[in-house]
Length: 158
Image 1: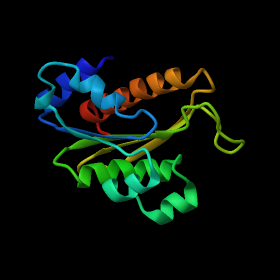
Image 2 (image 1 turned 90 degrees about the horizontal axis):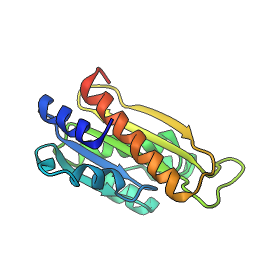
Image 3 (image 1 turned 180 degrees about the vertical axis):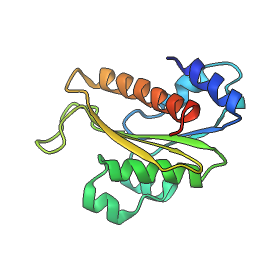
């Protein structure tokens, strides 16, 4: 599975993609837009590293951020839904996590929460524990998983 597969599927389905990224800092959007012709399927991308950006740009509620923390499926869900609401896209993916170094007993390094939303379908969330293979590797794995989630949302019933 590659970014090209995601773009080809989105073009074939007539869908536009939006990304909402935190710990990956735009890596998913970059992977998609590195490919010539990506403008046919990519609407836009949000890099919302801070809680204020998550709230202001995507509409993630302050209450959700306060209650669950930025690294949570609840925030990933609101990021994915907010990206759809605040763009002209049909499908979104969100990523929020702890790439490292660091973390805590309750939110360890390598924990990444994802959301994927498609207009007309329920939003899906999940959390992966990548461990502590290093910041670059957590970010790379997160990018790749987000692309896989997008492909699944585009080609199957999400």
